[in-house]
Image: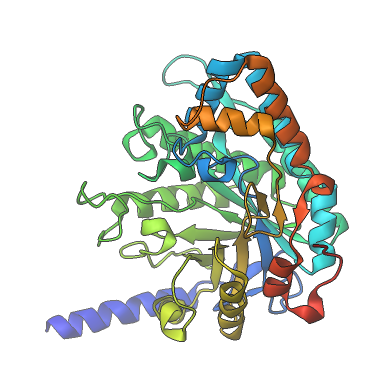
Length: 421
């Protein structure tokens, strides 16, 4: 009897999913059963780069792995140079770190997409009004930068995936990823934070519902949280994931009340790898994203995700991979494309190698980071500010160190052009 009921339940799910209409709209990238398709309904392999470090800084990208989260880095910098100059640095960093030249270069190299990790604070200033009647005050800087990015991508016939990388309150114990402050309520412990996340996606849907350059909305980057067992910090042993499924369902409903065009992307717990209890998702225009770092490049290594693709009749997309060597990159891309899976490599640029572009450090900045790591004396405010502003300037494409080998490993010799050593 038990086996019969399980079989009946499975058949009910399959019938429900197969009877649901495909939500992909003409002109928009969409999920068509087990593959992603372009606006004409043709199979589309997304080959992209993630703009990590631009809106959300992780410590290791800045030579400050010990400080981990962006809010900690910012606070420590402000202790040396003051808050006003700190804001000047961050604004210059965002002005220079990603420009039209970066997108033009990516298009020339053969990439067709970009994944944008977003920090909620660049889109939400705060709230106004009394409890029970609050209105969100939007931070237009974030939207202006998305608008500019869309323009550069559109000119190059490329796609954009919007990724909520740092959600209100933070979605994981790995605080560097989401810039979470452990002294404040997380996304999972605050109804207000969850409401702000849903409101942000609703506002994005309102502003961009007709924008075909946007391929999809990546709803929540790398949740890593033990809901059933607090000792399971990464959520890798989680078997139910009820709060994660709930936030996805509520967010999807809010988006679909406004925008029925765009493909949605969901990530599992355990840094995008644990989908227990999350599936099935009723919305048929939804893609599963997994992240692949440091694991073997064998067919067996992605078999669990291939089974999910078949079981739930939905596409797969590797939303993050990288931080390895060129040989691994080439093998990983070959494996994924052989299985009809698109990808987005992490990141386009940072301080340090392993990416297509490298940001040069400088002596003044090195003295500051040595101090912040506890390895040197405190620099003067003038010297620290000089180093930070030089770093922001050197984050520009024309001042980056270019690594042709990385581009070649990802794209293959036949599709590589324009990169320099």
